[in-house]
Figure (cartoon, rainbow, N blue to C red):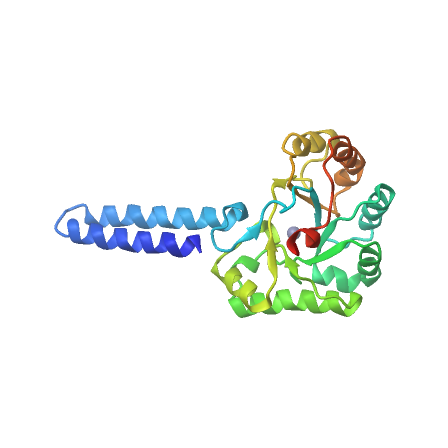
Length: 250
Ligand SMILES: [Zn+2]
């Protein structure tokens, strides 16, 4: 969407410069600068899901509630502990699960579902090369994740989070083909790299405000140690925590 507009502007700029400076000795340099600038913008658009450059993603909640989202599970070492903390707090969250992990640990998917959390699609493979998949390969991978979840829970996911938050024009095709809604985030916690739970807590709470979607991982032990304090913070500051589907179905 924004990508198409930007592409149009740059093609027009190339043509205009080509016409205006067709005899200029530095014409090639001018054209090169325009092309490099274009490539830089498309790269930033690819890595910044919040920009809604290639696709529209939900980057904050519609009703000002807080959405705690957990990516990359399920993991038998950590997911049950996250579920226990949420159950004690009587909170519902959103889990963007990886299809191949779901296939390995279907009981954990059943437990997430039985506890009333929302399960979203985070691709089947979560392959580091998924950004260069052809559009059909991407659709197949994402559908395979939805098929796996549906087979275990009987419910087909309606929401999707792009692995690594990376998007490109093939993701626009994916959303169109599958009908999935893309969910981004407001706050990226970096809980897979931050090991100190106090530091993680401060990083999140310093940015947290009504409507924040928080990107966490149920594979992170730092998150397990930090989560009760974060939930307390939400309670004390009158920030209601809800799962994503409540928000998108409004
Ligand atoms: Zn992920």
